[in-house]
Length: 107
Image 1 (cartoon, rainbow, N blue to C red):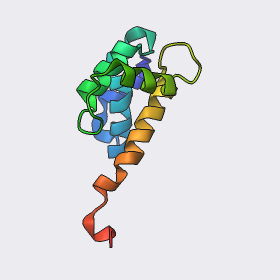
Image 2 (cartoon, rainbow, N blue to C red):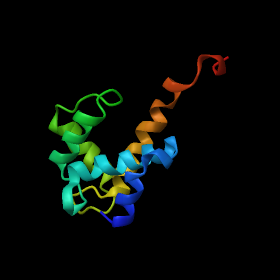
Image 3 (cartoon, rainbow, N blue to C red):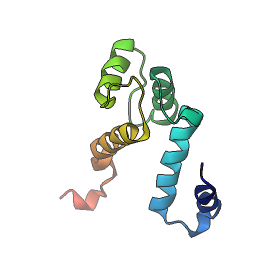
Image 4 (spheres, rainbow, N blue to C red):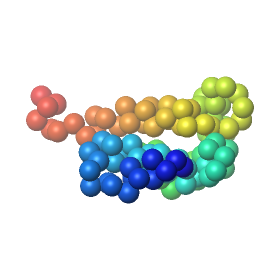
């Protein structure tokens, strides 16, 4: 990670809620991808099962993982880079959006 990023995350009190959330997404990605900054299938499965289990059902079937991985791996390099990972985050966030709409706005 760059020194600037480390300094930015160190001063969390100055970050907005959205910025803090974005930094969390970046940290979680790097927690599972390590220094290579790419996720293999097993790492993607662990990330989803450990970090997204309230929004996505845990992946037990290899066929499910294979389909999701193929959909995300836009460049066909058999790894998920950060941009491809963000596609997953945006899809899940969009799908779960209605769960968080205040009840008075549904009328």
